Amino acid sequence: MKLLLTDSGIKNTSINDALVDLLGKPIAESSALCIPTAEYARPGGAGQAWRVVSGREPRAPLCGLGWKSMGVLELTALPSIDEQIWVPMVQETDVMLVDGGDPLYLCYWMRQSGLTDLFPSLRETVYVGVSAGSMVMAPQHRGRLRRLEAGCRWRSNAADS
Image 1 (tube, one colour):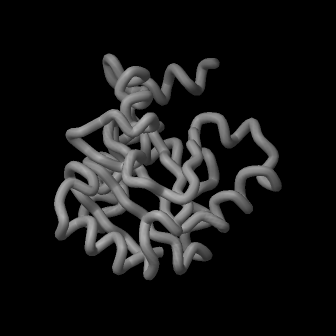
Image 2 (cartoon, rainbow, N blue to C red):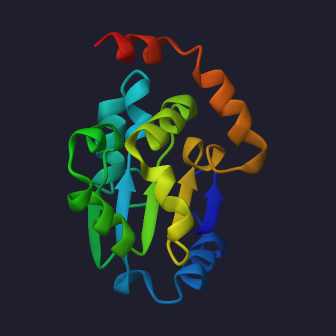
């Protein structure tokens, strides 16, 4: 997988050029999946997720860049969906746009959903992280996030459901 880790999305020409270089083709010829999962674990997260997915988030541009096709991949839903439905979609996409929010929540659902199991096979896929979406992929944070995850309030609540 090719990583483009940012703090605020495709916000300037330099970052845009880096994305196009990683894709190897124009954005207008590329398919994208937006992953807003990290937004839901904080106040106002549903509204923020909608702004990102709809391309109406000027502070962290992702979905409104003129993609050939755009889908939404909600990680919390994946454990209840047959892998034959969602895995091919992930494998065929050019870029995953992983939004910010709560990095522990995102880390947990990336693993619970099975998405992290696919990462080694996604050699040509571009992963664009914004804030928390970047943190979960940064080598210096990965182990620490997994250790912290065990003490999260939302995790114990989820386990009780």
